[in-house]
Length: 115
Image 1 (cartoon, rainbow, N blue to C red):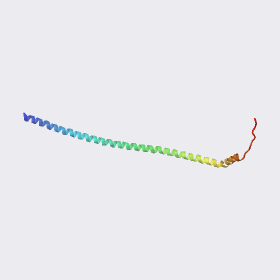
Image 2: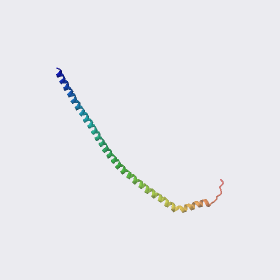
Image 3: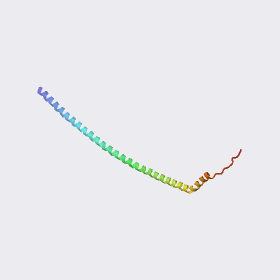
Image 4: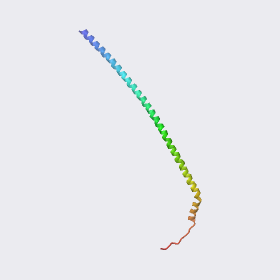
């Protein structure tokens, strides 16, 4: 009976070792698969980030050009208005200076009226 018990114990120990090997292989496979999944997720995230960054740059470029055009148009309008004001000033500059000097230099006293 002792031999039978020893053989049974040995069979159980062999089965336990075999089960331990299977569990270890399963853990290694799981660890490997988790690493692969993590790497795949990182690649997908980077691709998505690059796509969104490209979309943002395209959007920014389109809208920045619109702002530049508006700025250029506003600048042209401002320059035209400034030129018009300068031309009007040059045109009537002599008359304005003459009227100012006349008002300061030529004094025309008037008597106060008694009420």
